[in-house]
Length: 254
Length: 299
Image (cartoon, rainbow over the protein chains, first blue to last red):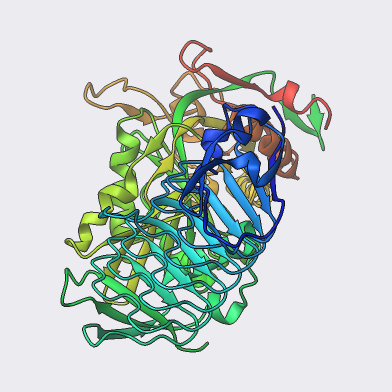
């Protein structure tokens, strides 16, 4: 057993490398050799994790992943616990359908982070994803529970079809954010293009946003300034074309 | 044993095991946090009639509270497990939920025994309430006319101690009151301790049952009532004309002892003859606070 399992990508990939076997709670029971033997898909062909990553450590729920990971997909799929620290940018499908634990990306992430697996009705159902760069399209789509934080900008359709949970976006959101949202919150600290089916409710200081941003600052090291923590937010209820119990909370100043 | 010429009786206070919760109330300003805490802890002096005992433990600086606002920590005690959540739900619902700007947090987060107080109060939201999980804890957002009331879903409950006490026997009422006030000032803001009676002081200490009325659970402590010295089995020494009691409840016995260690010397002032304590012969309560042992390093 070691404190952490470290995976270092040996070289940048020309093809998509589906590495949905990188799941901390799964690593908890595996030796270094067993982790290296886990199945991945490279360019549509089966391969082993050890063919692409240098693996050190064993039997730990803390995982560090490094290298040029822009073509690496599906890290943290369905994880239920533990933590993954990704040192740099990462490809699409990060934390698909995850149920617990934390993924911390020290860079950008591709499409569909925290989203649903193909054909699934629910995206992430718990846990936390913190992306310290920007994120691609469809981040947090159909999420059922959990927390997705994007320190950079969001792509199209962020939080679309959310069933519950919370998305915090520090940068600007692309079009279609929150569309078909049933419940759940999108906290927009930057600009956001709201669907026409959201209706303004009021401007106030939501107490849970205060608590949430303090938590991110204290426990996740996200640099949140006080103006956001104690600021006023415009509340837009929606999507009124759906259940309408969700909200977009847009920062409105101090 | 004497402190400043005041006799410390060779006796002990007898206290009981109770169930305790710590409630942290925050507000936009300390004024509003305190307003809610005062209402919440109102009519909570003794389990004899109030069914709970509560008091303000201490005021909290913004850096000490979950939401970075000024706050007040309250301890809440009942005799059994079942009545604590009932009391909290009713009282928080009527005094904290209603109080402008406040939020309500659990002050015993590491305790495994959880009371679903926030979960019960969420229904005030009539279906418009929403929950958020932050850092593994669930909070309920209850929409109210002001905006939103935020309350933690569960609150910790642990065993506590109720009924720690000492009595101040003084030459006159003025000296007794001055000594009691000094003791309360010395014990205020002690962690893990509350003084549930008005101003921290009890003038009407009671004995169990009644000599005359069968239905009475508690009646006047006639052995310590100076006006009855000539007509009852009095414990009021000659020269003593007024007695006041300090009652202490807490999260644990060491916290109560630490507070007594501060309060008793503060009460040893001119005009005070004796410090003693109330007990039932040691047969009822498992916690015995021996005055001379507690004060051994002070005297």
